[in-house]
Image 1 (cartoon, rainbow, N blue to C red):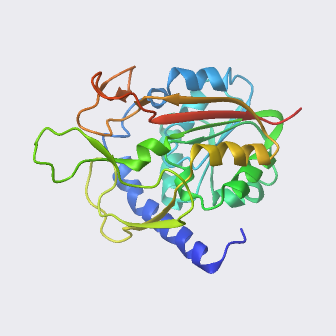
Image 2 (spheres, one colour; image 1 turned 135 degrees about the vertical axis):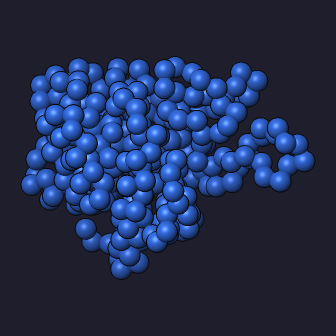
Length: 279
């Protein structure tokens, strides 16, 4: 991984942040749900039958979604993550479920080397992963190198619209559900430093490694990076549902998912991109 010193320090901060988040997440109610409940039906349609296929989950965190691939009959399942604490916890969780999953600690940019040049039929990533990557062209080239000819990459991510929006603060009306633009939809302004005591799950606050870094990526940037890496785009989906309740006024949708109420504008909250490598 050949990044400048500043970016390497940012990666180190991100790693420390996720190391401290890991025990909080592992003990949370947020993650105490069935592995398959994190997936929308269209994700399984895009992935297809996993029987006899080798699957790699990049930036897998606790291996929550990784476990679903093993349960779906994949021949082998591998999870890779930057956080050593997360990888250790993912191994513990998989062993507790008698799932044969190989977990590897590495930065995603070092994945090809860390996996000894192995290639896979399916590479999966998403739901809060790409914002920790400063260079999508290098990421897409890495993904392409990890795919066998004919293999697919499936990316399911928080839509830039979701990331850009936030609730109105300081409203005169207690029940105000209005959403306003708070963050960038598109890349271009570089890294964003975040200092946050609380993580996104239930549980105690972080006490030490509260600083992290994120990079904005528009949907067009993601698709273009994959195409530049020589991958063929098979589908691009946008969905108005999320696998958790982002705002208090969201209502239940499909099983395990939430959406904005009927009187709110329909906006994309997740997107899914599937691309393939030529045979």
